[in-house]
Amino acid sequence: MEFNEKLQHLRKQQNMTQEELAEKLYVSRAAVSKWESGRGYPNIDSLKAISSLFNITIDELLSSNELLEIAETENRSNINGLYNIICGICDILAVLFILLPLYGKTEGDTVYSVNLISYKGATKSITTVYWIIFITMIIIGAVKLIALYLKKDTLSSLLSKISVGISAAAICIFAVTRAPYATLLLFILLSIKIILFFKELKSK
Image (cartoon, rainbow, N blue to C red):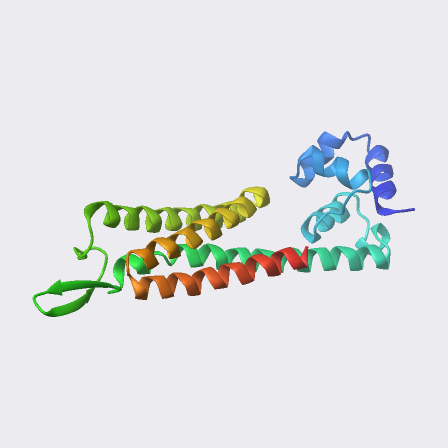
C-alpha cells in the first residue's frame, strides 16, 4: 500500500474529513487532497505530525523509496530557500549605494567621492531616478524575505525576476550617466543574482 492510500485509510478509520485532518496538521485541505491523490508528499514536520496523530511510525507510513524522495525534495527546497535568501539580501544591500561614496562631486578642480545623500553632480531628475531604483530594490529584497518566511514561493519567484530586470536596467542607467563605481558594484550584484537564479532553476 502506497503512502497516499495509507493516509486515506487512516483518516477514514478515524472518521475524519480531509478538512478536519488538515486542521489537526495545521495545513490546507488542498495539501491533504494532494497527498491522498498521490501528487506529492508532506514535509518532514507534517510527517511527524501524521505519525503522532495516528500513533504510527514513519517507517510504517512510507517505503524506503518514498522516504528517499521526500528527503531529496526537502533538501532541494532548503537549497532553493538559501538561494532566495541570498538574493533577497543582495537587494537589501542596495542601501550601500546610498551610503557609500560611489559618486563624483566636483569642487573647483578637485573631484571628491561622496554618497548619494551628498551627491549634487547630476540633474535633479537623474538623482531622483537613482533614489527610486535603490529604494525599489530595498523594498523588493525585504518583501522577498517576508514571502520566503510565509512560504509564498510564487511571489518569491516573481520578485526574483523583477529584481534581475531592475538591476539590469539600473546598470544601463548608471553606465549612461557615468557613475562607474556604482555601475561596477551593480554588475557584481546582478551577476550573483543571475547565478543564484539559474542554480535554483537547475535544482527544480
